[in-house]
Image (tube, helix red, strand yellow):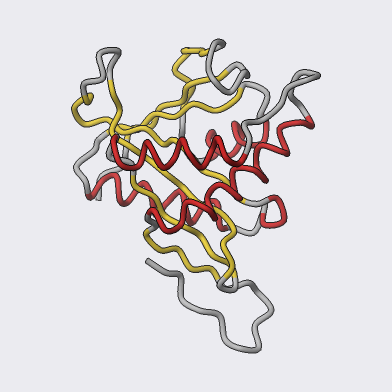
Length: 182
């Protein structure tokens, strides 16, 4: 999936969104590393993000086991962000019928405000619908005001669920979205 290219004399960046795979995990780890580094501006003192190696290993394990799929966003042919989702699982690890979880939506900081996050988001929502999902959920850090405002602007609603004890070490807030039809 791709946005129409800008003419050669157009100064706007050229966005390309394509389906990602295991070959893109290194670029995705770079996106996560950049995104998590920005968390230091609002996280509690002493908070440390996962290392790039931890993120890469986690994604390598998850992608082969949990049904995750991803789209990579490129600006002028350079990886700039990604979005990832997987089937939602209940407390027993059983898929929840009709529900998917958005697990990542990260852009490298230099591309915030470019429009690529919205394009990645919308591409993933279309893919969720194509796969038969009716609802989506996500976790985002309570302190990530910019991310929370982004999701709210796109129609996501807080569910009231909090996750204070997770591997990230930050309180997470859950959001939900009924996927639009059509």
